[in-house]
Image (tube, rainbow, N blue to C red):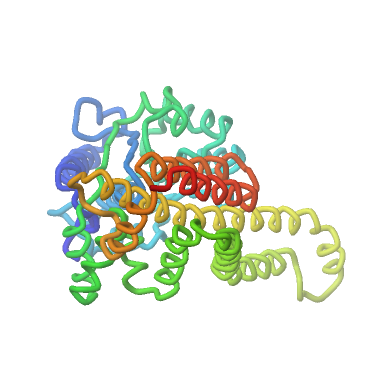
Length: 406
């Protein structure tokens, strides 16, 4: 990799702007200036990166963070120096990356970050706070962050990532204090080129890019992970099952697999966190008072278990969301084929199945299927139990196909 910006796929205009910003920031650092001296330049103290899933919001933010800390005298964001490599690895001392362990980012966590970020940089040029899912800030956490953005410490940069600038994703006041960088969905050829560069066979790279919905990370998983391929097939199989009584069995299996995947992903991390906390609290120690320390640590262990449970819930929802997006895209393909629209299919390898669906149900029925799936996504996001939301979706899809059968 010759530059940190090479990790951004299909975002050429964005890269130009970020390079210019990093160059302007370097000039301020060289003159001994602060964020106040960034006014009127290509750089600013607060950024908001938006775009659809997979467009590279957090990648763009981290690339800018690396370029701002870069030690190369000629090329901000060289991708080779210690600063660049540690920022990309998430280990740089002056870059704090915040992502929700559970369903939201709490005010306590944000206050701790704000306090740390108010200090002078220890090894880098700037203190940088990178919030990967700013749409999950609680109202109180957003207010704590807003205070820092409105009155920024002299050497602190804030980078926010959110799906959109809609008030439901980011507060209007917070958004107004940031420079907005909208990212677009990268094209399938651009994603395939990245996969090939990573050593993936050209045919597999083209297939994964074509069915990923423009999501770079998902394309990589589909190209390399047989389990991800299996889960996609299972999700798409719900469309076939919706025409029979077996649809509820498929839904139940979908949920079981999501829970199993989430448990597998988090098991090692949960165990490591628990052991680290017990060790920090004195477990395994000897001498006077060690037993008493552990007896008084029940509250901290309970708090950790609560955070781990929330993270597991989030992982289940994320896995289900990927499956629902795939399923909605399949019915969308059937709808466009049924109406004769000349657009690119999101599941080109399932063209035969979508043709059968288009022949089975009228367009209004297929549209209703898409709506039922999107309603299910929204219900899960609003904390409806997944099993209830999925069963309601299955009933809605089956009803739509039955009532609008050709």
